[in-house]
Image (spheres, rainbow, N blue to C red):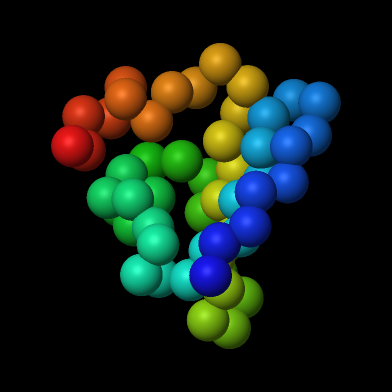
Amino acid sequence: MHLNIPLIAGTLKIKTIQYMRRCELERQVPTRQIGSLYFIWWRKGLSPRAFHDH
């Protein structure tokens, strides 16, 4: 399960562990776990490509 919530300053993503990227698992972006859900904050202008997890 994953859910993206666009906000003014970026995007709040809510995911289960199977949908997470390597940079999110390594906590290179702000990540908070509550139960089995992970709340990840991607600020505007930050690209997942910058982390080279292809």
